[in-house]
Each structure stands twice: as C-alpha cells, then as structure tokens.
Image (cartoon, rainbow, N blue to C red):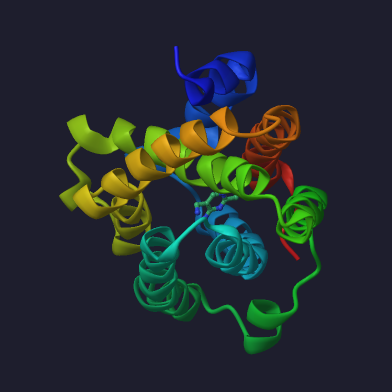
Length: 217
Ligand SMILES: Cc1ncc(CN)c(N)n1
C-alpha cells in the first residue's frame, strides 16, 4: 500500500462519511435545496481563497520547474473555470456582492482556512501536498459517484460542480498529486504530512455537515 493509501485508510471513517455524505447524495440526485447549496458555495468560495494560497505555496516549495509549472497550470484553470462556476451560481442563487466577498464564516470554514494557511506557512512540500491531496482526491472520489447517473438531467449548478471534480484533466491531476505526495513523503519525515492529511479529512467531513445543518444567513 502506498503512503497516500495508508493515510486514507487511517482516516477511512471520516473519508467514507464525506464521500457518501447526504449532501453529496442530494447533489447527485438533484434534490439539494438551493438554500443548502447557497450556504455551501458561499463558504466554499472563502475556502478557495486559502486554497489558492496553498497552490502558491506548492509553486514555491516544489523541487523543480516541471512541478512548479504543473501547479501553475492548475492555478490558471482554477482562476478561470472554477471561478466562473462560482460567479454563475452566485448570480443564479441571488448572492449579493458582500456575501460573496466577506460572509460570516462557519466553524469548519475557519478551521480549514487556518489549516491551509498553516500548511502554506510551514514551507514544507510534503505538508502542502498532504492538504492539497485530501482536498482534490476526496472531491474526486465523491464526484466519481456520479458516473452511473444521468447528470444531463441535473440543473447546471449541480451538474457543473460534479463535472469540475470528475473529468480527465482533474483525474490526471489527482493521480499526479498522489504520486508526488508518495515521493515527497518517502524523502522526508512523513509524520507532519500524515497529521495534516488526517486533519484535512476531518474538516472535509465537517464542511459537508455544516452545509446541511447550518441556518441560512
Ligand atoms: C471544502 C472543499 N474541499 C475541496 C474542494 C476541492 N478543491 C473544495 N472546493 N472545497
């Protein structure tokens, strides 16, 4: 078993709970109420701010130009496709500018933000990779559940969020990240990366929990 797989197995309870979360079930079958999607996306847009910082830290701590360019390409796609998705969905859901830019943050959002900023500040490539890998791999896992569904029948704000996390480019990026994590942790003290990995998995689950239970502002 690779180190990445061992980390995932060590967090299997939270991982599986997140991948099979009722939030994901409702997103995949198109029954997720708009107020829940709205809350989730408003929080997730704030998640994205620190996520971009983390990708920047990956550019800065990667061992060479090839790896830096890989992260830079993902940053570019993130700034285009993913940001477009948020803008379109916020328009459809009637989210005002203030709530897009500076909403009240839910606890899992604050804690994820802190973890990503800590990982970026650590200047440790394995720790940066650990948090990036969880965020991308776990999303790829739940989105893959949509493969045997008729996604064309879903509203674009549901369908596009699923497809952003399950397409050939995205899946290749997750495979690459996983291999990079295995290489980087083999060449360093892997314990801080394993701890960051487990923390991130717990927060992914809490992020979905919050999306279903939180009151709408
Ligand atoms: C909370 C969370 N985790 C992961 C992803 C996928 N980058 C996301 N958009 N939001």
